[in-house]
Image (cartoon, rainbow, N blue to C red; front, side):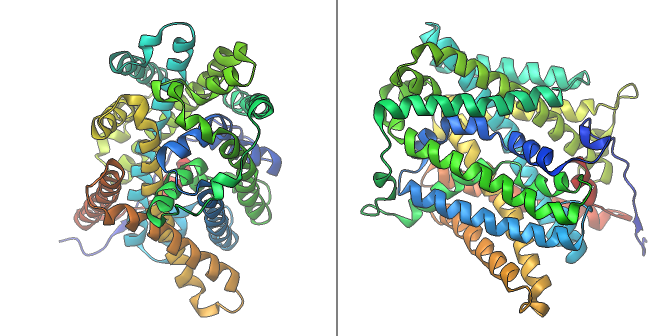
Length: 474
C-alpha cells in the first residue's frame, strides 16, 4: 500500500515565443495581452452579438462586467505580488489552499479552453462565410455550407499544428493589432451616417436581472485569456512591479473599445441582413457608405482569426499534453514528436474538439453553426467563471487575518465572488428551459465531473499531481 507520495517534476517544452529568449517589456506584454484577447475582431462584432444574446440594459451590463474584471485583476495582482514570477491562477490556488481548489480551477479552465477553441474556429468560419456571402455566394450562409466551411477550417488548422507549425508571433500580433484601427475607422464611418444613440442602452424600463446576468456571461468572454495575463507579466524583468500595470492596462484598454462597439452596433442585431448570416462588420461597411470595405474587412478579420485559431489550438494541444504528463488525462496524450516536440495525439484531440463542440452546440440551439458563436462565448464565461470564483475565495481566505491592511483586496475578492456566483446561479436556476440555461448546466456539470475524475486519479496515484505545470504552458 502506498503511504507516501512523491512530487513529480514535469518538463514542458518551452513555448515558441519571444518571452523565452529575453524579458518582455511592459508595453510589449500589454500588446500581447491585447492580441491574445482578440480585442480587434471582437470590436467588430461585440455590439451586435451582445444585443442578440441578451438585450436587457446592455450598457449597464458592460459597465458591471468591466468593474467585475477590474476587481478580479486586483485579486490576481495581489497573488502575483506575493508570488512574483511563479505562474497564474492554478499556482495561486494550489499553493495557498490545496489540491481540491486547484482541481476545481483546473477543471473550469480546461472546460473553458475547450469552448474557446470551438468558439475561435466557429467565429473564423462566420467571417469566411461573410466573405463568400458578399462575393455573391448567398448559399454559404446555409447549414450544409457552413458545416463544410467549419470542417475545412478545423481540419486545416489542426493539420498545420499537427506538423509542428505555428502562426508566427509577429503575424498574429500584426494582424490582431491591425484590425483595431481599421475597425475603429469603420465604426466612425458607420457613426457618421447613423449617429450614436447611447440612451436606449441604459433604459431600465424593461430591466430584468436575469437577462442582465445572462448578458454579463457573454460579455465576460470579451476578456478571453485574462487568466493567462499573470503568466505573461511574469516574463517581464520586474514582474512584481509590472504585474498590476499589465493586468489593469489590458482590461482598461479593452473597455472603451467594447463600449464604442456596443454604442454603435446595437441596432444591427435587428436587421434582416444580420439574421440572414451577414457579419456585423460588412453590414457597417454597407450602411456606412464604404461598401467597398465589406469584403476587405471580413478578409482581414478572417486572417486574424485563422492566426488566432492556430495559436489557440497549439496552446490547447500543449495544455492537454501537459495534463497527460502530470497524470490528469491519459498519459498517452503527453507523447511528443521526437523531431520537433509537437504533441501530435493531443493536437488531434484538440482539433476534433474544435469541430465537435460547435456542431454539438448548433444542434443544442437548433440552428446553424454561426448561431453557436454567442453560446460558445457564453460557455467560456460559465466555465472560466468557476475558476475565478475559486481564486477569489482563496483570496478572501488568505487576507482574512490581515484584512485591515488589505481591505481593498478583500473587497475586490468579495465583489468577484458575488458577481461570478450570481451569473452562474442565474443560468442554473432556469433548469433546462432554454439553450442558455442548458448550457450553464453543461459547463458546470462538466467542471464537476472533471473535478471528480481528477480527485479519483489523485487518490489512485502514488505521486502528487502538480497542476502548476499547466500555468507554465501559458
